[in-house]
Length: 222
Image 1: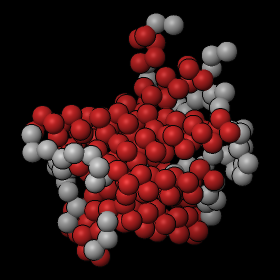
Image 2 (image 1 turned 90 degrees about the vertical axis):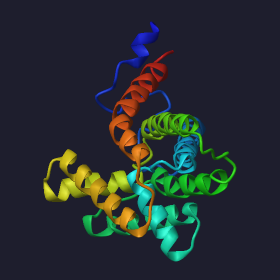
Image 3 (image 1 turned 180 degrees about the vertical axis):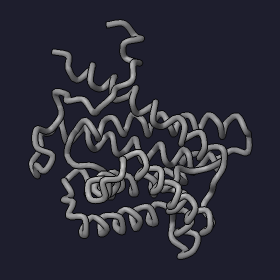
Protein backbone atom coordinates (compact mmCIF):
# COMPACT_ATOMS: atom_id res chain seq x y z
CA UNK A 1 0.00 0.00 0.00
CA UNK A 2 1.45 3.36 -1.01
CA UNK A 3 2.03 5.98 1.65
CA UNK A 4 -0.17 8.47 -0.18
CA UNK A 5 -3.11 6.04 0.00
CA UNK A 6 -3.14 6.46 3.78
CA UNK A 7 -3.54 10.22 3.34
CA UNK A 8 -6.72 10.06 1.27
CA UNK A 9 -9.51 11.52 3.49
CA UNK A 10 -12.39 9.30 4.62
CA UNK A 11 -15.99 10.33 3.95
CA UNK A 12 -17.41 8.38 6.91
CA UNK A 13 -16.27 6.51 10.01
CA UNK A 14 -14.91 3.18 8.77
CA UNK A 15 -15.52 -0.20 10.34
CA UNK A 16 -12.27 -1.81 11.49
CA UNK A 17 -11.28 -5.12 13.03
CA UNK A 18 -11.36 -3.48 16.46
CA UNK A 19 -14.74 -1.74 15.99
CA UNK A 20 -17.51 -2.85 18.33
CA UNK A 21 -20.49 -4.36 16.55
CA UNK A 22 -22.73 -2.90 19.25
CA UNK A 23 -22.13 0.73 20.29
CA UNK A 24 -24.13 0.12 23.48
CA UNK A 25 -21.99 -2.84 24.56
CA UNK A 26 -20.96 -2.75 28.22
CA UNK A 27 -18.42 -5.55 27.80
CA UNK A 28 -16.37 -4.68 24.71
CA UNK A 29 -13.38 -6.67 23.55
CA UNK A 30 -10.05 -5.73 25.10
CA UNK A 31 -8.71 -4.53 21.74
CA UNK A 32 -11.73 -2.25 21.26
CA UNK A 33 -11.50 -0.83 24.76
CA UNK A 34 -7.74 -0.31 24.42
CA UNK A 35 -8.15 1.64 21.17
CA UNK A 36 -10.87 3.74 22.80
CA UNK A 37 -8.79 4.53 25.90
CA UNK A 38 -5.63 5.40 23.97
CA UNK A 39 -7.62 7.52 21.55
CA UNK A 40 -9.28 9.52 24.28
CA UNK A 41 -5.95 9.98 26.06
CA UNK A 42 -4.37 11.32 22.85
CA UNK A 43 -7.36 13.63 22.36
CA UNK A 44 -6.90 15.05 25.87
CA UNK A 45 -3.14 15.37 25.37
CA UNK A 46 -3.71 17.28 22.14
CA UNK A 47 -6.08 19.60 23.94
CA UNK A 48 -3.43 20.14 26.62
CA UNK A 49 -0.83 21.15 24.00
CA UNK A 50 -3.25 23.72 22.59
CA UNK A 51 -3.90 25.09 26.08
CA UNK A 52 -0.19 25.37 26.87
CA UNK A 53 0.54 27.05 23.53
CA UNK A 54 -1.58 29.94 24.79
CA UNK A 55 -2.60 31.20 21.36
CA UNK A 56 -6.17 29.94 21.24
CA UNK A 57 -8.00 26.81 22.37
CA UNK A 58 -10.65 24.68 20.71
CA UNK A 59 -14.12 26.27 21.05
CA UNK A 60 -15.23 23.88 23.80
CA UNK A 61 -11.97 24.38 25.71
CA UNK A 62 -12.37 28.14 25.40
CA UNK A 63 -15.69 27.62 27.19
CA UNK A 64 -14.13 25.33 29.80
CA UNK A 65 -11.29 27.79 30.44
CA UNK A 66 -13.78 30.64 30.77
CA UNK A 67 -15.80 28.67 33.31
CA UNK A 68 -12.60 27.69 35.14
CA UNK A 69 -11.64 31.37 35.34
CA UNK A 70 -15.00 32.35 36.78
CA UNK A 71 -15.38 29.58 39.38
CA UNK A 72 -11.72 29.17 40.26
CA UNK A 73 -11.34 25.56 39.09
CA UNK A 74 -8.60 24.01 36.99
CA UNK A 75 -9.31 23.74 33.28
CA UNK A 76 -9.34 19.94 33.51
CA UNK A 77 -12.08 19.95 36.14
CA UNK A 78 -14.03 22.56 34.20
CA UNK A 79 -13.77 20.36 31.08
CA UNK A 80 -15.40 17.51 32.99
CA UNK A 81 -18.08 19.88 34.28
CA UNK A 82 -18.89 20.94 30.71
CA UNK A 83 -19.07 17.31 29.57
CA UNK A 84 -21.39 16.42 32.45
CA UNK A 85 -23.62 19.41 31.65
CA UNK A 86 -23.80 18.43 27.98
CA UNK A 87 -24.77 14.87 28.96
CA UNK A 88 -27.70 16.29 30.90
CA UNK A 89 -28.80 17.95 27.65
CA UNK A 90 -29.08 14.46 26.15
CA UNK A 91 -32.09 13.72 28.36
CA UNK A 92 -34.73 15.87 26.58
CA UNK A 93 -33.62 14.62 23.15
CA UNK A 94 -33.59 10.99 24.37
CA UNK A 95 -30.03 10.16 23.47
CA UNK A 96 -28.48 7.17 25.23
CA UNK A 97 -24.77 7.26 26.18
CA UNK A 98 -22.49 4.31 25.57
CA UNK A 99 -19.50 3.30 27.67
CA UNK A 100 -17.32 5.30 25.27
CA UNK A 101 -19.41 8.40 25.93
CA UNK A 102 -18.87 8.21 29.66
CA UNK A 103 -15.17 7.36 29.36
CA UNK A 104 -14.77 10.25 26.92
CA UNK A 105 -15.97 12.70 29.56
CA UNK A 106 -13.70 11.23 32.24
CA UNK A 107 -10.48 10.44 30.37
CA UNK A 108 -10.16 13.60 28.29
CA UNK A 109 -10.74 15.80 31.34
CA UNK A 110 -8.36 13.71 33.49
CA UNK A 111 -5.65 13.82 30.80
CA UNK A 112 -5.88 17.59 30.57
CA UNK A 113 -5.78 17.82 34.37
CA UNK A 114 -2.66 15.62 34.61
CA UNK A 115 -0.65 16.87 31.62
CA UNK A 116 -1.31 20.56 31.09
CA UNK A 117 1.07 21.62 33.89
CA UNK A 118 3.74 19.16 32.74
CA UNK A 119 4.07 20.45 29.18
CA UNK A 120 6.68 23.23 28.96
CA UNK A 121 5.25 26.61 27.97
CA UNK A 122 7.21 29.02 25.80
CA UNK A 123 6.98 32.64 24.69
CA UNK A 124 8.57 31.70 21.38
CA UNK A 125 6.02 32.13 18.57
CA UNK A 126 7.44 29.20 16.60
CA UNK A 127 7.25 26.87 19.60
CA UNK A 128 3.65 27.89 20.24
CA UNK A 129 2.78 27.29 16.59
CA UNK A 130 4.38 23.84 16.67
CA UNK A 131 2.48 23.01 19.87
CA UNK A 132 -0.78 23.99 18.17
CA UNK A 133 0.05 21.79 15.15
CA UNK A 134 0.99 18.88 17.41
CA UNK A 135 -2.19 19.36 19.41
CA UNK A 136 -4.37 19.29 16.29
CA UNK A 137 -2.60 16.16 15.03
CA UNK A 138 -3.04 14.36 18.37
CA UNK A 139 -6.72 15.33 18.51
CA UNK A 140 -7.15 14.04 14.94
CA UNK A 141 -5.49 10.71 15.74
CA UNK A 142 -7.35 10.39 19.02
CA UNK A 143 -10.68 11.19 17.36
CA UNK A 144 -10.14 8.54 14.69
CA UNK A 145 -9.28 5.94 17.32
CA UNK A 146 -12.25 6.48 19.61
CA UNK A 147 -14.70 6.95 16.72
CA UNK A 148 -13.69 3.67 15.07
CA UNK A 149 -13.99 1.88 18.42
CA UNK A 150 -17.75 2.49 18.01
CA UNK A 151 -18.65 2.51 21.69
CA UNK A 152 -20.78 5.63 21.67
CA UNK A 153 -20.11 9.24 20.60
CA UNK A 154 -18.51 11.85 22.83
CA UNK A 155 -20.93 13.99 24.85
CA UNK A 156 -20.65 16.95 22.46
CA UNK A 157 -20.94 14.88 19.26
CA UNK A 158 -23.94 12.98 20.62
CA UNK A 159 -25.69 16.21 21.54
CA UNK A 160 -24.99 17.59 18.08
CA UNK A 161 -26.33 14.53 16.23
CA UNK A 162 -29.28 14.31 18.64
CA UNK A 163 -30.23 17.92 17.99
CA UNK A 164 -30.01 17.30 14.26
CA UNK A 165 -32.31 14.29 14.58
CA UNK A 166 -34.89 16.17 16.67
CA UNK A 167 -34.87 19.47 14.74
CA UNK A 168 -34.20 18.25 11.21
CA UNK A 169 -31.68 21.06 10.73
CA UNK A 170 -28.66 20.01 8.59
CA UNK A 171 -25.82 18.64 10.70
CA UNK A 172 -23.32 21.21 9.41
CA UNK A 173 -25.54 24.08 10.48
CA UNK A 174 -26.13 22.51 13.90
CA UNK A 175 -22.39 22.06 14.44
CA UNK A 176 -21.49 25.58 13.38
CA UNK A 177 -24.21 27.06 15.60
CA UNK A 178 -23.07 25.08 18.63
CA UNK A 179 -19.35 25.76 18.08
CA UNK A 180 -19.84 29.50 17.58
CA UNK A 181 -22.16 29.73 20.59
CA UNK A 182 -19.81 27.99 23.02
CA UNK A 183 -16.86 29.98 21.63
CA UNK A 184 -18.60 33.33 22.16
CA UNK A 185 -19.71 32.38 25.68
CA UNK A 186 -16.21 31.12 26.49
CA UNK A 187 -14.54 34.30 25.27
CA UNK A 188 -16.96 36.43 27.27
CA UNK A 189 -16.09 34.38 30.36
CA UNK A 190 -12.35 34.86 29.81
CA UNK A 191 -11.33 31.87 27.70
CA UNK A 192 -8.39 32.15 25.30
CA UNK A 193 -9.27 32.87 21.67
CA UNK A 194 -6.53 33.37 19.09
CA UNK A 195 -5.00 32.11 15.88
CA UNK A 196 -4.75 28.63 17.40
CA UNK A 197 -8.56 28.54 17.58
CA UNK A 198 -8.85 29.59 13.94
CA UNK A 199 -6.21 27.12 12.81
CA UNK A 200 -7.99 24.35 14.70
CA UNK A 201 -11.34 25.25 13.14
CA UNK A 202 -9.96 25.01 9.60
CA UNK A 203 -7.60 22.06 10.08
CA UNK A 204 -9.40 19.62 12.38
CA UNK A 205 -11.94 18.41 9.81
CA UNK A 206 -9.37 17.40 7.16
CA UNK A 207 -7.00 15.99 9.81
CA UNK A 208 -9.71 13.77 11.33
CA UNK A 209 -10.80 12.66 7.84
CA UNK A 210 -7.24 11.63 6.95
CA UNK A 211 -6.76 9.86 10.29
CA UNK A 212 -10.07 7.99 9.86
CA UNK A 213 -8.98 6.87 6.41
CA UNK A 214 -5.65 5.64 7.79
CA UNK A 215 -7.44 3.81 10.62
CA UNK A 216 -9.80 2.20 8.13
CA UNK A 217 -6.98 0.93 5.94
CA UNK A 218 -4.86 -0.26 8.86
CA UNK A 219 -7.86 -1.87 10.54
CA UNK A 220 -8.91 -3.72 7.40
CA UNK A 221 -5.57 -5.48 7.00
CA UNK A 222 -5.41 -9.21 7.75
